[in-house]
Every structure is written in C-alpha cells, then in structure tokens.
Length: 491
Ligand code: NAD
Image (cartoon, rainbow, N blue to C red; front, side):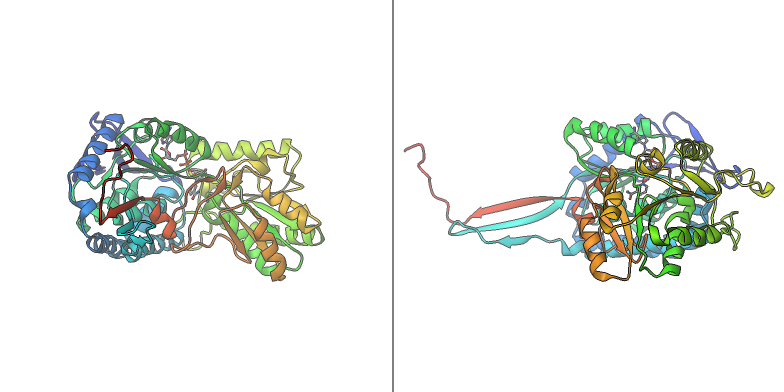
C-alpha cells in the first residue's frame, strides 16, 4: 500500500518520527491506506514554512485576480478528478458514492464561488471629516491560518476553509481528521498542480492532541479555524488565547425541526426523514429533534416509522444502499450508550435502537435508524448531540410552545419550520435562535449563504461573503494631504 505523505513547504514528506497510521473502511474494517502520522514537530515545520511564505513570499501581494484564477483551477481539477475523489470519500467515511458525488460538486462549487467573489472584497474610500485628507478602508490577509477539520464531511469542510483563505492571500496549515484524511491529501496534490507556491498551503496529518494542539497554541499562527465537536472547540478557544488568535469555530448542533398541522403532510414526513438519515445522521445540522403539533403527532410518527424502517443499509458502493455505517467502533459505542440513556430516561423507543442483524453488515459499524417518542427537553437525548441515525420526537400544542421547545438548547446551528401559513412561518423564524433557519425545507445550503451557529454552536461564519471576511483584517488608512504642526504642546 502506497504511503500517503504530508505536504510541507512544497514537498511531500514522511512524518519526522517515521510513524504511520492505517486508515480503515468503516463498512468492513478493511485497510484502505497507510498515511504519515505527524506530530508536534511536523506541525512546527509546516508553521515555519507558512510563516516564511507569508512574511517573505509573494502570495499576500500577488494580484487577487491571479490568486482567484489558481483557486478557479483547483475547482476545475476537482471536477476532472471527481469520480476518484468521490470513491475515496466513500471508502474513507462509508457514505454512499451518490452522496459523495454530490459533495464533490458542492466542493468544486465552493472553490468557484470564492474565485468569483475574491476580487470583490476591495477597499472603499470613506468620507473623511478632516479637510484635505483621504480615508480608505482596505482588507488584507490575516497571516498564517491553522485549519482543523472533522471526519463527517472531510473534504467539504476543508473546502470551506481552503478556498477563502487562499484567495484572500493567507498562508495556511491544514490538519484533517486523523481518521478521514484521504480526500484532503488528494486535494493538496491538486493544489500543487494548480500552481499554489511552495509554503503557502501545507498539510500535516496526525492526531488532535499533538498536531491540532500545536496549531492552536503556536504564536506564529494568526488565525485558527476549527470545525468539530464542542468540547474540542472549547479547548481550542482556550489555547488560542495564548496570542489572541482570531478564531472561527463551527461546532455541534441539536437541531429542531418543527412541524405544524397545516404543513404539507407527505413532504414534511419525507423531509423529516431526509433531515436525519443522510450519512447515518452524522451531520452537524441534522434535524434530530422533531417537534410535532399534537393534533398530527400520532399519524406523523406512524407514517415516519413506516418509511424509515425501509431504509436500506449497506455498502456505499452498492447502488441501492441508502445509508452506510457510522464512522468508527468508538462512535458506534457512543451512539449505543446514548440510546441506552434515552431508554433509562423514559423516552419510548419505537424503531431501531440496536445494530442490524444482517450477517453482511457485521464487520461494519452499522446502527439501525432509530426513533424515540415521548421525549422532553429535560432528557439528555434531547439535549446532547448523538451524531447518529436517531430522531427524538417532542410534541406541542401552541406556536409559543413550539418556539420555546425549539430554542431550549445550548446549541443554535440550524432549525426548520413546516407550515403553509407564511405569516406564522415568518413569526416563528424571527424567534428561532439559530444561524440557519429553513421554512418548508431542511439541510439545504449553498456557498453564497453564510453558515455558522448562534450560542454554543460556534463563533463566526463560513461560506458567503462573511466566510471570506473571516480571512481578512480590516485596515483604515488615513492620508493627510496637507500636514501642519498642531502645536498642542506649544512651540
Ligand atoms: P472532534 O472535535 O473530535 O475532532 C475535530 C478535529 O479536531 C479533528 O481533526 C481532531 O483531530 C481535532 N482535535 C481533536 N482534539 C484536538 C485538540 N485538543 N486540539 C486541536 N484539535 C483537536 O470532532 P469530530 O468527531 O471529528 O466531528 C464531529 C463534530 O463536528 C460534531 O460535533 C459535529 O457537529 C461537528 N461539525 C460541525 C460542523 C458545522 O458546520 N458546525 C460541520 C461538521 C461537523
């Protein structure tokens, strides 16, 4: 098996300590790759390269149109190698190849979008209150960016960070999740092919407590952008205080999906299912908290159960598979214990709640689609992020109650409302404390709109214009065209 290396200062290198890590397919635990397993010393080497490329290299001062055309080229190369990338992502994560193909289109779209808007973030002349002067506001790159990504959407999350950082003239060190690094390694090959200069984009593979911790604490890193779990996010926020790094955090979610009785029933059932079971529920914005109006509750749950029990589990490479495995044995154990807690807390298990019995699935980390009813907000299964194929159902009688339930969370990433009453819909979304709120929709996103969380779901925004601004510092330049002594202290 070919060893996948790290990319530091324009060279493909092994870990300094010679360590490697075996990557396995979560569908059958077969070994699919061996990758370099870097540590703190490799992270430092990459930071030094990125620092030098920023302080002494040409990239920050390269015309933005030139940087944008390189970012555009990366999009084209991703499209060229889409099939290879999609298959790698499915091997690494277990998700269906069909889902991975959609991801690759989205990823190319993210690079294209930032190539297009990169040069629209120019400065502006603002009216100066001082006669004979010019006041300009300009946006400059932040510097060296540390970028840390999770395993659920490995390349998609990487693209949200790489594209805006590159087009705005930053240099960077990326650390993908140690269990799903393969597509990120491949995209760094494409970054090299597209002509990004040595030292500008660096890739270090390895564990969070070593490589990730170094990126968060090293004083030569100016910005840390992290996507992952809330507990890791807290550690990074603390670590980043060492030199008051700029921080961007995309953390977890426990997302409410509110269905009123006047919603289109069939569509709401279908989308309530899609909101959770894509990628086996391992989606930060999954609509895991289904909040249903009491008058349709029983009928809705019945229809949902009927449909969910037919979800076909299997290999992401089989055309009829609808849901793949969870990412790892460790994550499967977490989901199992979460379900046990739900049962102890008094929630009613109406579907799933165990591993499938199909002999063909025994080597994979599979878990059956699971539905709990009779849930209340004091239960930990309603409050904690399970990141698995689980829906908890709560019910409400009034609009006020629905909103109160929806907001009863430390998280505020996303939420949805289903109703045909547009005034009610607008009233509800105005009160929902989340970074994205869908009306008669769930989980849809595109590169033009910002993504991020209220409350403990994070800090800052990715995607959209705000996702570009995260990677810039704003500078006010005041130019006095007629300087004179002030004589404040006398002659
Ligand atoms: P995680 O927090 O365990 O790991 C994420 C990354 O952080 C990995 O690369 C890991 O190696 C690294 N890391 C771990 N400890 C570290 C440390 N001490 N210092 C620096 N880096 C460290 O998360 P995960 O299990 O990989 O991903 C699942 C989580 O990601 C879920 O909570 C999910 O909601 C969240 N997520 C959020 C979004 C979003 O847009 N808000 C998107 C995808 C995933």
